[in-house]
Length: 415
Image (spheres, rainbow, N blue to C red):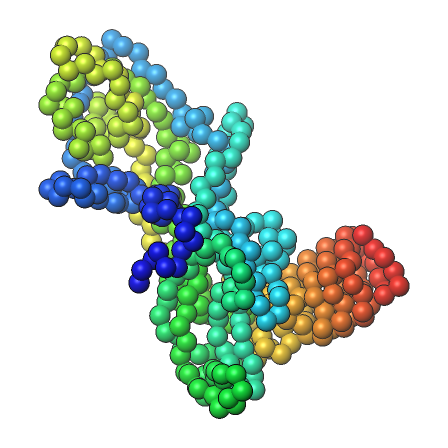
């Protein structure tokens, strides 16, 4: 595949390279034997694989006072790992799934935000991919046995931000009856259909039903097709590639010391910056070497990161966190919205997201419910409810209701 054929012209090769480095927390070093060749390793592998241990206990100048700083004092208050906000939609019903997700959660789909326990620092450091990610949605029909999970990307869009997804290969169609599972394609006026029992899948999971890999930074609050997901995994970018980095900053120290370094020390270190330095009773990684003078015998200033004990991440699989009750998955086609938080909801429109329990929605409606015991009548569009025990009559358009125990009919206006 020629990548250049599928990416906007404004994206440069160096931007793709930089994006890989930032998403996977990659460290780079020169290949030991091949010219013009770089070796890319994740941070954990860089400091773990065949690391040389150097005893510099006798090289330290103990008459000089060390400068010790907590790494958390040198950082922003929080780090935001995120993708670019997408502008995608499903062309068949014009539902903007990314927009709905952000409105209901306040987050970009797939982002991860972490905070440091330090009241003396402020600000946010953003690590943002050049790509967008997009929700997975169920597209199906009980009459034709169509049953597939696809990214919410509209094929009719003129311009679209580049979207990153994981190619999962051909996936078996999944039908509520678990038999004759397939989907059909017709072309133009030709009423004959080509029947398929597998479909090409891509998304943020490696598999839409039983994932083991997630290219998101963090867990999503919900999936639009949550009822059909068998299991979930915590094998995301933050847990696998960034957690030990975060742990180092949270509890680590930066120590600036004076050491007697020789030319042989410098020549070795410049190609082995991942070496472990042992001084007296602790291990360190080198952060920076300054003011080394090769023609003079003297002290060199070295910034050392005290090594905090990291841990090797082991992915775990858990049962579907979005739905714990087994129900007929045919409901996902005929009477369930893009996401329901509980089977106690009765939602008869695919354009309503219900984040609560005991909510009722009539057919032909659209909007978001974030609360319990609410009612939206049929053919009511653009309804946004936050709270409990609210009733919106049939045919109401473009209303936002915040609070409890309210009733809005077609002739009313509510903000």
